[in-house]
Image (cartoon, rainbow, N blue to C red; front, top):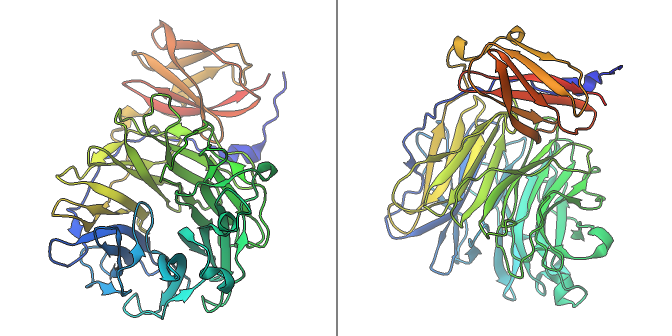
Length: 507
């Protein structure tokens, strides 16, 4: 048997320790500085190149509409400047995952968009910018085509910027349904190459399979752009009430888009509005990481799922269920990735708490933890990495009254707890390696307890799990399942050890 190793693929595999970490949260700080009784909603948080923290939110009325407020911190979130009121008229929509979205370009200019019905009672996407950290702003500008802005409705907008400061705005658009050209809302996009002064003609970007269906009419979509201008837009579909997660992708700066790529591997069909959409992040290698909620389970219980779309691939990794709650409500996950490809994921639960993951996901085993468990609901949580690896968290919190915006940070890290907890590489021997499907794999391990075996493919998908049989102390075995040729990560776990090694499969 001759096995040829693709060394390029080997470089993609991370040999890792399943390190443990302790959460180290600061005391939450209330960001808004108003008296009690108001409703502060829908926070969005970004970290600038200057390391400053920027947060927007909407002070809403009982119907969910309100005005946008903005603040920033120059001392890593210890204190925040008094908030600036950006809009007037209390008509900015903050319901569900609608919010005032913004990005910060390479020059430090802040570009913000939101939904508001300023013309003919039709919601449009409006744009402003600030060059002084949000203290003053330009006059609002409509980014929707002039012939359509007063006639047709838009919804759930999102904004991104590339390294050349080209701006991209995506949104749900109803012009085809209102013209009776389609029964589905569609995904549209516009761009600006002059810093937001002018915007390109709006164009439809979701190329549905066989032209059937469109976007979920009531679910958030989100856009991400690589430094080179590769555009990724994640959205939830409506294909005869099939409400799955898809991605639109453009590799030429948004000029043309490929056919949509299916991310969700378990179909969710519901004749209703789920009112929940995906959240995404690009890593340094331009792999797209996605989190979302769906109810594919026949029990009707909501679950939080994760998947990754590798760069240049038309197939996403298998979906990984994150949430463990038996409750019927978990929702609105948020994801962030740092330069080391560490991943942080947060989501809200029906028991008023937030749950939080952090690590080399999905290659390290995660156990989620509830954070900031106090009276009142915690909703619409954001998580972002600071340059030193600290995670900043920001959320809507009703512990005081109807709603406030809170901020905290987690400076915990993965560390080897003790040298004895982790075995050295030569302490584990795998034979044979390479091995063929259906054959017995033998392990020699300095260990006296039960050993659980988990095997992951190069995308981080778990493809096998079993408790290995222990014939004599230190010797374990298991039969390899039917797997394709390739390079896999063998994860060995017990009460005494946690370790991983490369396993080569050659049939």
